[in-house]
Length: 251
Ligand SMILES: [Zn+2]
Image (cartoon, rainbow, N blue to C red; front, top):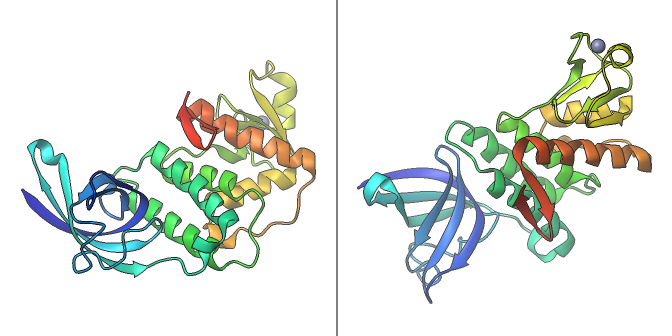
């Protein structure tokens, strides 16, 4: 049996008995975990109104059982939570989409710190930003996959290695781009998506920044379509996840 303290964002909460809850938490040091909170829906002393999705908590956790497989949330204190976000159903929908992706991909101890910072920044952005980029969940998938170590190189040609400044082809199955010169000589890609220079620039920026800074000039409809084909294609091919009816399905 051991005990530790960590900071965590709540990804999901469910009831399993009248007064007891299970929670999926993204912990800053321990990664994504499922825990039980006995008396979670009743105890105002141990959980003062804080066990809610998107809240950031300071948690005391006790592990027991073989291989520390059973984790018990002993106590939690609210550190930060959304203010107006919960009453905005459209923004909550975007939040849910992003959190489902986090859950589906999972977070190990190694990437926990970065993932935690991203989700906290996402919550603050959804809560306070005047305007949100239209493709926020899509951008978040690309960014979060990158934090987990799955980042396609979108700045340099995967064949000749030269920096790409203009339009290029994203080869989804290879997770890299081809410059126009290499594309002419190489055999045709199995699964290629043409990306304009504006799209490539946006995607490179998204890969390196936090959601709160994602303000971009509007794109043309074909550019938006190519962008979602590129990102969703990458997520599906390399991470094995596809968004269907409100869930990410393993494919
Ligand atoms: Zn090239």
